Image 1 (cartoon, rainbow, N blue to C red):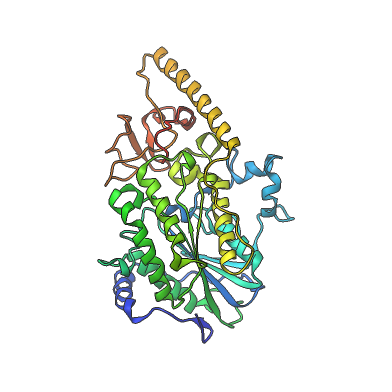
Image 2 (image 1 turned 45 degrees about the vertical axis):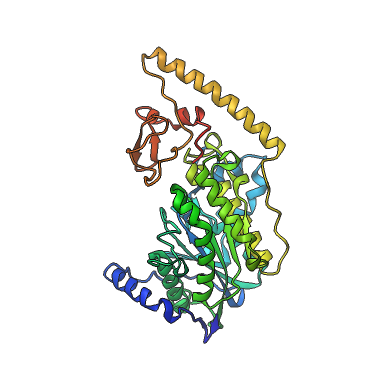
Length: 428
C-alpha cells in the first residue's frame, strides 16, 4: 500500500524464497529497461493493477493482416467497425492512452495495441482491462503484467498456503511488482512521486492445470490459497480480484478436465468469504472458432483479436464494479438461441467440407485423414506441441509457428483444410 512515495510490501514470510529466486536469476538478470517518456496525466496516487497468468494472459489476439478475426479485418467490416473505432486515433495510428501505463518484461510505456503482449502484432487482456479501468478512474493507472506460457497454478504459481514448494512464478511475480514500484520514478520519469496504491489483481490462466485430472481437482483449493496469499504478501487484505474464466472452446467444450477448471474458478468467486471482492468473468461467449479466426489454435483462442479484447473488456468491467463503479453485466449461462443456430450451420458446413476432403484424398489415392480445428487434447502428463500423442489415431507434429498441428497440414500448409473438417469432440 501507499508509504513514502512507493508501495511497500513483501513480508518476511516470503523473503527467503525471493532471495533464493534472485540468486538463481542473478547471473541472467537483464539490465533494467530504459525509461519511458509517457506523461502522467492522471492524478496520484497511481492505481496499480497486477495482471498474471499463462500464455492467454500474455495475449495472442492478432492485430494486422487480411485473415478473419484480426483487428484490421474488424475495422474494415461495416458490421463491426464501430465497435473498435475507438482504437484508432485521428492520425490513423493506434490510440495511445497516456493515463494508463503498462509494464511487461522489458517494455514499459502508455497502453496501446501492439505492445505488452505476445508480439508487436498481438494484444492480450491488458488492452480491454486498461481501457475500462482507465475510463473509470481519474487516477493514473499502472498495469504490471507478469505472464508466462505453459505455467500451472499447481506448480509454477503455487501459493504458500497450498504447502510444498512455493512456485517460482508466485515468488517471481512478487519480486517483479516490488522492483517496478520501488523504481517507479526511474522507469516513468514523469511520475509525480506522490505515491501509489495496489488497487486490483487480474488472473487469466487454466490451460496447464487442465492437462491433469489431479491438478484440475486441486484448482479450487489452490486458487483460494493464491488469493489469500497474494493479499497477505502484498499487504492488501481485501484486494479486488478478478478471475477471467478459462473458456477457450466456448460452450461446446466437453473435456471434463477443462470444465473442472472453469467450475473451480466460478466456485472460488462464489464463496461467501470473497463476496464483494472477487468476481469471475464467464468467457465462453467470447470464443471464435477457426473458420472465423486467424489461426485454428483453440487453446490460444484461435488468435482472434475480438476474443482477447472481450476477455479484457469483461475483466475490466468486473474490476470497475469491485472498485465501486457500475455493476458488470451478468455472466451468461449458455449460448443464445441465435448462437446455437449459427453453431448448427457451422457443423453442417464442416460436415460438407469433411465429405469433400475425403473424396479429394480418395481421388488422389491417399487415405482419408480426419482433421482437427485445432491441436487436440493430449493425454494427462503430456503437453501440446509434441509428436508423442495422437487424437483418435491422428498423428500430429511440432511446428515453431503452430505448436502442434494435424498431420493433414503437411505439404499443403493450408490450415483451412483442417479447420473446415473440424473434430467437434476436441475443443482445445
